[in-house]
Amino acid sequence: MSLYKQLFLALILCFCLSACQTLSSADITAQTQEQLDRIDIKAADTRLQQIFNRHLVDNLNQNAALRDLSLTTELKATNSSTLAVRGKSSTLSKTSMQLTYALSDRVNGGALTSGTITATATSGTISSYYGQDKSKQFAAERLTRQLADKLTLRLKRYFLEIDQEPNS
Image 1 (tube, rainbow, N blue to C red):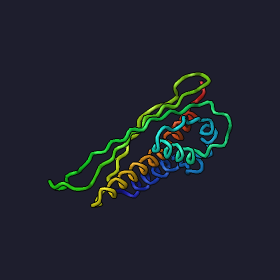
Image 2 (cartoon, helix red, strand yellow):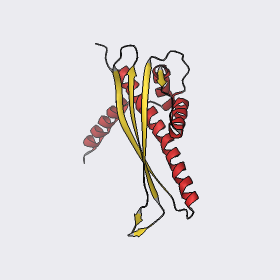
Image 3 (cartoon, rainbow, N blue to C red):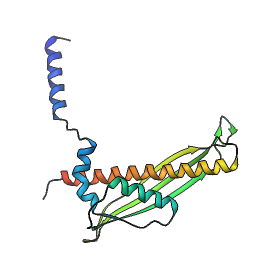
């Protein structure tokens, strides 16, 4: 390749990279914190929902008293009892969890965003039944925290996209 082509490609690459915008986690949080403060989270019914709500509230870092947005969530957990490894049964257990969420505006009554997030974890390799039950419980609790993290990121992305839309 000639020197001019290499120089031209390098110049185009520089222009492309200079046009990219990067946001740090702190920048994203600063831009979305006002909207995240407005979210009211429904009360928990189960232990897993309590863990989820506590982790979500910690992630959202809510401070404001005005709560004009309503977030409803539903957790569904499923366990498959035994996984087969190379045709032989094992004590491994696969736990899947699905989070369905909907964010709505209490003032206007409209739905803002909704969706489904899934996560899976494998637990086991413990010979005692008590240990297997505890392992499943810990896997479910880890998944609820992971789903709360993913939901926090989705809400931040939603509010960032709204801020970027031109007002018409």
